[in-house]
Amino acid sequence: MSMLAAIAPAFLLSAAPATGDALFFERVTQVASNRGELTQYDPLEDVRGAAKVKPLPRAKRPTVASDAVEAARDYAQRNNSNAFIVWRNNRIEHESYFGQTNADSLIVSKSLAKPLTAIAIGRAIKLGKVDSLDQSVADFITEWRGKPQAAMKIRHLLDMRSGLLAQGFDERPDNHWNRAYLDPDHGNYIINQYPLTDAPGSIYEYSNATSELVAVVIERATGRRYAEFIGDEILARIGAPGGKVWINRPGGLAHAGCCTLLPAQSWLRLAILLMHDGKWDGRRLLPAGYVDEMRTATTQNPHYGLGLWLAGPYVDRRGFQNPARPGPKVLHSQPYLARDLFMFDGNSNQIVYMIPSAGMIILRTGDSPPRQPEWDNSFLPNTLLSGVPGFVPRPHG
Image 1 (tube, one colour):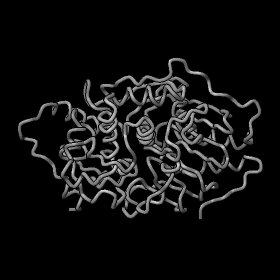
Image 2: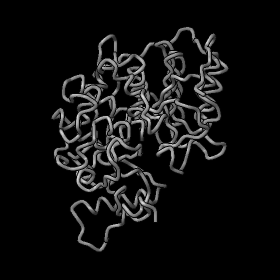
Image 3: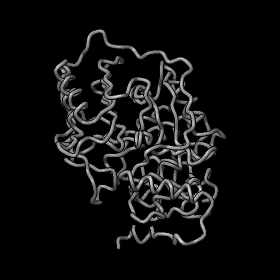
């Protein structure tokens, strides 16, 4: 038995059920019958966006070669995409939707929601509700005062160095991973029962539970619902359409780490905010230097910053888990042609590439690509960068 399996034993299912267990096991059954994913998020809470959405500017004369755009679009379409957008030099150059999806459709974000948690913390710092990235999480999760978890900093929730149990899978239904995701009171479970396996800051371990705690911090720091905060303080201020977020039960905690549903252009606008160093229309929404912090890797993972994936040193396969651990890894057939590239990157190969040196953003959302031919994470950016006249490749070796 592995160390993680030993840490996450099954509970005795014959014990008296706790409040909400019926809903928990209903969700477990749904996940088990659908390849590890929920078929629907229920209940959902509205996330307000801009009262009036002003269209993003569109390029009159595209700056990316048409054959490169068509090759990238074809790749997206062949790989089960529902949206594909190319933005360059503050203009949309191409926008396609596939199947039943359109510009107003809510995109199931999965882990595209994780960089939104980092943006939310940055906004809370700018508003003076959080002191800094190095503030103790226990200032807000007071249940941890006097415990080893008190060494955890806010930044550790964003760079996946919380020390909490790494993400994993256990076929037994009642275990730490399922409870932290599917329990109708998942936040309380993570705070009081989810294991701390390592000293905070000492190791990178990808974990949905770690990201879910950002919603707790935001709500306790601001006195506002997570949905209200991200809607009013982020989306509305960048002119983005709103959407919905999954909450564990009516009035319960939002799932910050996985389940925010927004139209494709809202994800694009969040990327534009970062490309503009946390400013929108000249107004600073994030602290000066905060985006640089988001784009800074840790020694424990050279490809991950604060909710963002980074080009980093070239590896032909990169996974989400600790780099030293075996497990699924995404193909990168070539080094990214721009070493300053960074990404929102989530399950089903949903990805938003940001390339400051080319003034470019590329968005691809949708279902999981076919298993063969294998999805290549470097294809879209390298194909489109090759179509930019005068662009000088600067790959990271």
